[in-house]
Amino acid sequence: MSDCRMDNMSLTLVHGIPILEDCAKNWDQVELFQARPDDVLIATYPKAGTTWTSEILDMIYCEGDSEKCLRNDMYFRVPYLEFCVPGLPSGIQLLEAAPSPRLVKTHLPIHMMPESFWEKKTKVIYVARNAKDVAVSYFFFHKLVKSLPDAGPWDTFLNNYMNGHVFYGSWHDHVKGWWEKRHEYNVLYLFYEDMKENPQREIQKILHYLDRHLSDDIVEKIAQHTSFEKMKNNDTVNFKNLPSDLINHSSSSFMRKGVAGDWKNHFTVAQNEKFDEDYERKMSTTDLHFRTEI
Ligand code: PPS
Image 1 (cartoon, rainbow, N blue to C red):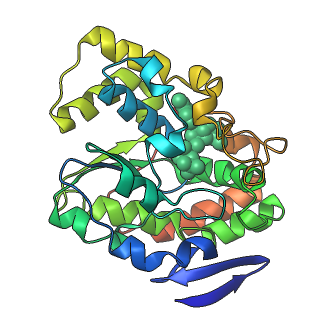
Image 2 (cartoon, rainbow, N blue to C red; image 1 turned 45 degrees about the horizontal axis):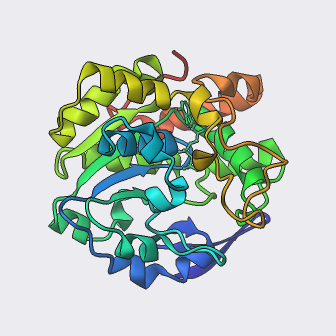
């Protein structure tokens, strides 16, 4: 581990990836984490639809009973494996205390995953979202979460993001890393844009992967309960119940826009050209393709 200072950001490199210092201090425990065969892991680069997918999974586990999903804040229902900040129980503490079957959230790049997930053959659902919408969403998220470094102005943030100088590093490496290993580790690889286009279809893909069956009525109920409009008004998925010294609800909202293509409202023509040119280079070796609007 070594200190890494990028512009005004203070993050620590763990296995080459910038990680929040408080989380990095807990890394021995992350590496030793014991997965269980009946865990289901939701893995994403930040802002790709993690909370949305987590709510869908919890609804599946509760067989469409939305009241049961209101039992607690998302942070406690689907613990965040590597997260550790003062003022909250760590993800690992919550997971170790949780009965099976557990739902687990992570933003780790594949090369940083604790080995036991592969040893136990845990099921993994990876969700990817196009790089431009993630950039915008991540920028606003930095205004919301007080433990994240100051994002600075949009242009500065966009450059840092393109260069991987943000919490969790390069979007390009993250999505490619999980894509390349998806067959080896039996990962269900989903896209945010597909979920927007047809949530019922994507819920059915998840059910098939998990070897579960729910009626079309329940699938419809899950799609309704997890629509952006419903989730925007659900405090348990908006960090509303977390301590106010961690979240600054006056500067942004977690359920911000929830669309594909909002990047067009933020990228200038020059930023877009530079981004595309960099993207072509970094993504030229993969057959992984994204839609930046639907
Ligand atoms: S985090 O903090 O990394 O876990 O964030 P994450 O949950 O991955 O991503 C947050 C973005 O997902 C949007 N979102 C949704 N979009 C559509 N439908 C539903 N139900 C939904 N739930 C969350 C959320 O609004 C964030 O995207 P932006 O573009 O900022 O609105």
